[in-house]
Image (tube, rainbow, N blue to C red):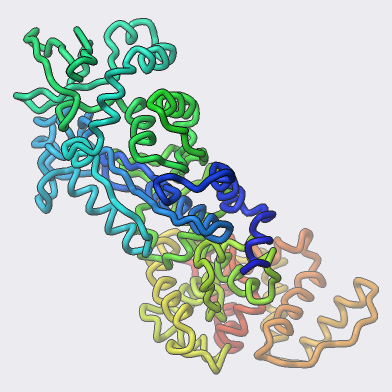
Amino acid sequence: MTDLRDAAMTSKAWPFEEARRVLKRYEKAPPEKGYVLFETGYGPSGLPHIGTFGEVLRTTMVRRAFEVISDIPTKLISFSDDVDGMRKVPGNVPNRGMMAEHLQRPLTSVPDPFGTHESFGHHNNAMLRRFLDTFGFEYDFISATEFYASGQFDEILKLAVERYDDIMKVMLKSLRDERQQTYSIFLPIHPETGRVLYVPMKSVNSADHTITFDDEEGREWTLPVTGGHVKLQWKPDFGARWAALGVDFEMFGKDHSTNAPIYSRICEILGTKAPETYSYELFLDEHGQKISKSSGNGISIDEWLTYASTESLSYFMYAKPKTAKRMHFDVIPKAVDEYHQQLRAYADQDTAKRLANPVFHIHGHNVPASTMVVPFAMLLNLASVSGAEEKEKLWGFINRYAPDASPEKNPDLDQAAGFAIRYYNDFVKPTRQFRAATDQERAAMEELVVCLRDAEKALDVIARKNAQEGKDMPLPAVNWQDDEFLQSIVFAIGKTHGFDPLRAWFSGLYEVLLGASQGPRFGGFIALYGIDETVKLIEDGLAGRLIG
């Protein structure tokens, strides 16, 4: 453990860098509350999207890293700002007409359009918790509705009244002139309509911690700031929540970064040290637009898990959080294969490299071994050429390539085979475009067929390639199950037929035989699909039988 902690204290992996910043807060004394608090926030104005999940996952990674370098206990809170008034009806929910009648009411007072929960806010909170529970996160959930109404927030709200002028000075500097005239940090909840009101204050009374205001019809009201009668505007709410809970670390999207100093200053005015913060880049859809809860663009968590494992999604979230990422279906195969590459690498790495490996931050100290003996991208191509509708058909090919593999011994591979068939049918099959071979490609593919049928011809083309390159190399041993031997044949044919650049040869194979612009390492594909099957595939491609 000492060696691990020493290595973690110098690791450049971003979760350890953030964990060390948190630890520095308590280099003189441990936290009075007895633990270090990590927080994530969620605004349930729409269905939880994959970015919401990513925020909890990444915060959990920092929390795990902290637990490596410190013995101070930790907690993670997922906080839902469900008192927020519904400003617009989300575009991806049913019964939108009914919801329109409840604009500006707190989300936990808006009826659930799905008819499954007591409110829209409760529905979205339940969805968030289901997603988080799917991934086994350890967290405490807090609803702002309960936080305000139960009195847990009362002392900070009273302090906000007493220090109202100081907080207003911070806020007014950030507002346009016209907004300054009507702005207040307090948003009263109308006693009759239940709507969250954006109205100016006539008075803020520190003696009895009440606010006085006129509603939209000009009627005067006085309400206590405690007990859930008001809520704070979202920027003051951020800082006040930090102060009330004693938050030590929170991350948020880049769109919050300009407001972070405001959150921190309000937290300090309310008597608490502001937390360490981390700003990550936003998730984008396939068109480069920011993923939005209300529009429902991008991939949902359920959609990702329809086509790939939870671990592959965690891997995608770990990598380069400071870089904007496009969240669309094309990224899934790459994430799956890179995750398993890192698993295989982990087994032979020293401590420092393990701490920099994404799989450590996904699994902690219990990193599993990969049982994926065939890459996911290869399974997709196998599903394509074999027309497999059930994973059992893929296993027939897999066992030819890896006789010792089985669904029981290779659960990762078995799961991936099912995912590959689903992904192929939904995304690859509808977009396949086969074309005819050029004269150069036809001649090369015809020779490839000859070489796959005759070992002597195969060795001859390899020898010709070596001579062309001026290399005096021994010829490889003939092994029709060895993907390296098969790859050397494919490579040699591309060289001797004058493809320049050589990738044009491989592109031709993919486009003529697989109907795609990219594809697998072709020697490995032949070994997996089979010699006779590959020969027939090439003959069908050259005869034009794959087109249309």
